[in-house]
Image (tube, rainbow, N blue to C red; front, side):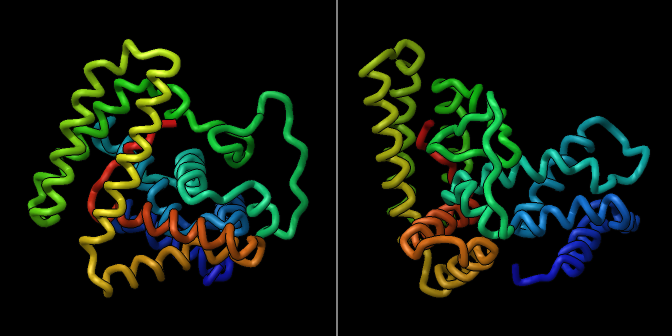
Length: 258
């Protein structure tokens, strides 16, 4: 990574201090070991921050805080966000093992690969994705598209694409629950095609400077894995990482359904 482990832990400590409204919780002892393992595993800082945010948001919803958040409480959320990121950009378990200079351990029973044949860290399957139904997926996608459309910052041409995709998804939602077999597979394939089209249009709304910034950010996210990946695999992962950052920047959902 671009940071050594000590610097990585200090960055996490600083971020957690901000989330705790200035209350400093030191990342030392077992907490230092925990965060060091994130760094060694290749968890990008931005992904770790997102995991911390996820825990804090859930914590805040419970009412007034009684005590500051410790980094140990955020472990499961950080690793879940990391798993989501790895699947999104196509980082395999072999790449993780290579980045750590380790040989991948055998997979225990009940820890088979998910999705595209990759394992989540520790063999944990993605909890949310495995339970998401197609109708509920379409509902969430439509809500996210409506939010993106309401920003009025994407340009008239892209707004028209969002409107057309939304109309098609709305029609699909009405029949998704009753689809089976070939008809369902056909709809899933169509969702993947719409996702690719939306991303292509989204990239077209960005100028060269914005695209360059996202490309550098993708390179930084993937820096821990680059040495252990074939050039073709890294190029695919980099392209997928840029796509993920474009979605994040424009508030776009993932239309494809797995």
